[in-house]
Image (tube, rainbow, N blue to C red; front, top):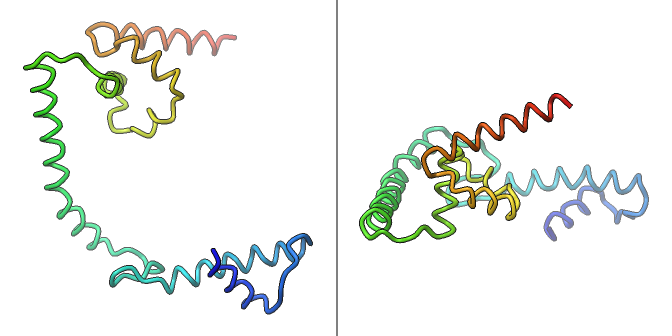
Length: 152
């Protein structure tokens, strides 16, 4: 931030009074230019952050990351089967959240689930939607509520 302010001062050639609308607009304009210049000149490793990403680099990263992702998935699956199917442990809060997301087909969208407030999450988990038949009843209830609100 301090580097950006120094660059803005260089671009403006004078000290700007941010309480004046005209100077504030000029500051914002110079700030955008300064941020772009700083990003353009910033290097991470051998890559310049201002340059576009090469698709080949993404492919290389994906290929190198895939085994790790596969190991994590395998560990999760083996742990789940051992802990709940073999040992018969009760589901904890995290496991209930996973099962609820899976039942509602929000499996790959953790950000959607995280967007719900804690009360809504808890109410949804308390319905135990992972048990057979409960998911369909819940979806039917949601459809009825949706269409009832449309009719009003």
